[in-house]
Length: 249
Image 1 (cartoon, rainbow, N blue to C red):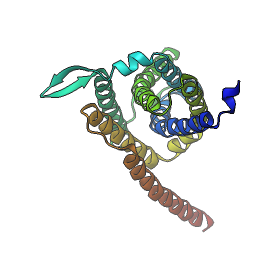
Image 2 (image 1 turned 90 degrees about the vertical axis):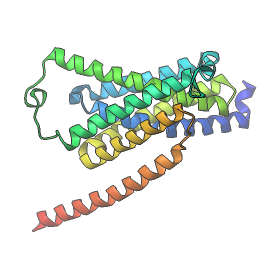
Image 3 (image 1 turned 120 degrees about the vertical axis):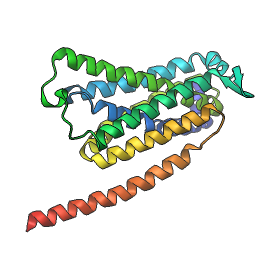
């Protein structure tokens, strides 16, 4: 147990946990938006299952490090550009994220007032189950993409598998705690939801670019999103004050 007294181990754990939390922001946003599509009574279960898949995927990838690192070897080349297994996963994941986020933006902006049968009538139990597991399936797919990038980053920072797994579990615990308030906030403010979807479009573009060895630092994406959210927070505050003044009169 003496290794637990090693300050370097705890520093590595803290740094990796912080990194996993930051890398998990896009995962939380994606889960929060998808969970909003299922009935309210099922949202907590869908959220827990989605984050549970995220943790299990990361741990399984960490336990198969030799296979994961083998994904970085080129499988074939196109126009002189080597394509590895990791590149294929990032490309397919990026395209899926672009398609899903664009579709959700269309629904929010263009089709919000076009009531479908699902919106005007209570869905049957079978329809609710299908919707629930459809959402979980989509979360599982994108978890693989986000987890692969996260695990490869972790391997570059720490060489102790136990520290990596502990950091992943701690990060998912924080994400589980934060996912519900974030999801509720996004549901209450449609404009924030559109911003979050635009953020996922940027992440999808970054993943697609990464597949072709064009690295886009996520710091730039997070900074742009933080600025947009800060502006939207001022708009929300301004609207709240106007509504309060109107109610007072």
